[in-house]
Image (cartoon, rainbow, N blue to C red; front, side):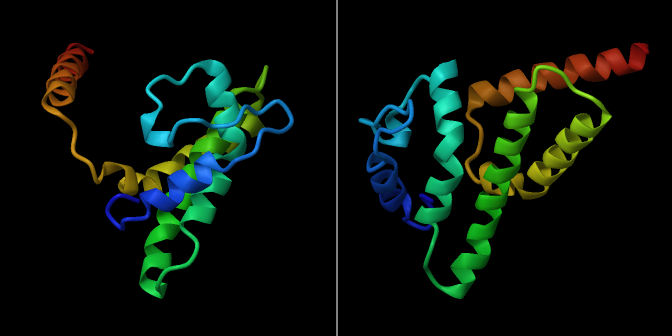
Length: 138
């Protein structure tokens, strides 16, 4: 949304959400939130897709085609989160979870626009080295 300068619209919709049915009103924009506890994540999962969809509504036909990716990415991630909250799983729910992860990975390119910082890159390199070493041993 930053790339297409739609972040202000997103934050306006985020902040305009009314308090209803055990949802607390938002007093900070989405990007100002620094901590996401379990309650906040559970609440956010109820309306994030709608906020993303509404904030990306409109624009040119080219933009609408681009905006389908973040909507589908969020939808898949939220579906996975909802399935993961089940108390028990069977083959069907595990299959649904695999499908949602597959869909997420198809559309996750929208999340990769921002590059990782040096600390994240260093940690990833350490983990990659450990994984390669472990695979060689096995």
